[in-house]
Amino acid sequence: MSDEADVPGRDGHRLDRIRLTGVTATGYHGVFEHERREGQTFVADVVAHLDTRRAAATDDLRHTLNYGVLAEQVVTVLAGEPADLVETVAERIAATVLAHPQVQCVDVAVHKPQAPITVPFGDVVVEVRRDRTWLPAAEPVPDDAPRWLPEGAGPPAADGPAAADADPVLPPGLPPVLPPVEPVLEAPPAAPAALAEGAEDEVVDAELVQDALDAAPDAPVEVVLAIGSNLGAAQDTLRDAVADLAAVPGLEVLDVSALARTAPVGGPEQPDFLNAVLIARTTLSPRDLLRATSEVERRHGRERLVHWGPRTLDVDIIVYGDVSAVTDDLELPHPRAHERAFVLQPWAQVQPDAVLHGLGGGPVAQLAATAPDRDGVRWLALDWLTAPVPAAQPDPGAASAPGGDGVPEPFGGGDPGAPADPLGGGPVEWADPLGGPAPGRQDP
Image (cartoon, rainbow, N blue to C red; front, side, top):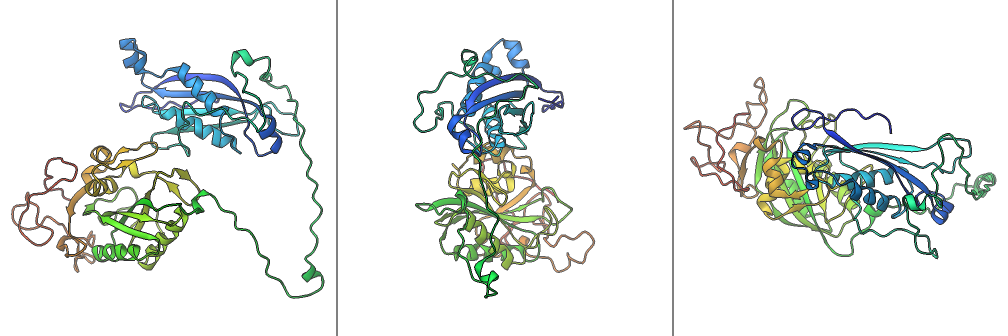
């Protein structure tokens, strides 16, 4: 593995490292049939970045990473369910290591020294670094996951030192003995008959290649959707968006959270957002649900011109049942949901016992209480779907005023330390959905 850059801990000091190199097992990963049938040697190097001071001070294994257990877990991944790509194997190892709460960052290198390459070579290595802000694109592999064997094979041979004679690692620089590659003979494509004869083009039926996110569920699945807006009449837009989502065939809206006014996170300077969370049930596939939510965004004029910029409407799929997946167009659960209070607080308000699954997840209420942007959630209105919230209405003069954000300050009039009733009354007692103290005034 190449030399790793230092990884700072929470206090800014460099984290310690536990390095495990040369973990070897027979795996069946690869795109060729003979790789799945015959297997080959895979080698993994792992560097876990963590703070070992407490373990050293107490001389207690519980406060550090048990590298014996880690080695067994790495072998479980290498010898487990086959993957086409070495990249997938590396992500599975990274996810398994980060499942240990002590580990803050991990470097993984997976070697494939017997890769089916037709020229002399020393090794093939895929290296990844993952941490708790850049999570792996895979789920941890359970310790009891079975070893994988091709159909009809006998019991697995032991991996590790005892199996060295049966499954050697090739010395560096020595070209491997390649397994036989089954030749594929392809004839040059013939011109379509219709074109050769000068006839009109014909429509040819083709099979649509799908992945798991295109499959509709066997039974309705609970989903969590987050909606937000900070341009125009934001409350009206969100109210209409709820109605539009409820009208989508195959999507049933079960509950809607309170309305939150939140400071923008990331991106350019822009107005505050109004946010809410919907609990729904769907018979749509994940990708069909994505198409439906994108269509609702389009109806309300959503344009993706600036990354994390202002928008008329944003509809995000936070979770789809217990599905965990990463594709080019959809990642489940939402990769940043665990650190976004503007999603977590409204979600916890409507589902106090909700749990966000996946790496970085946990009880939603606890995640909301520690989210980095928790101080940016300004207020919550409970009956915003049926009653106008004055503080959420656009200020006609704000758009032309220097620095005006189009969403007026909700805490107006009277004692500057007392919040105004968002439904038009006087000062009110504020109920924190997470059970914390009542907030004071927070100016934008």
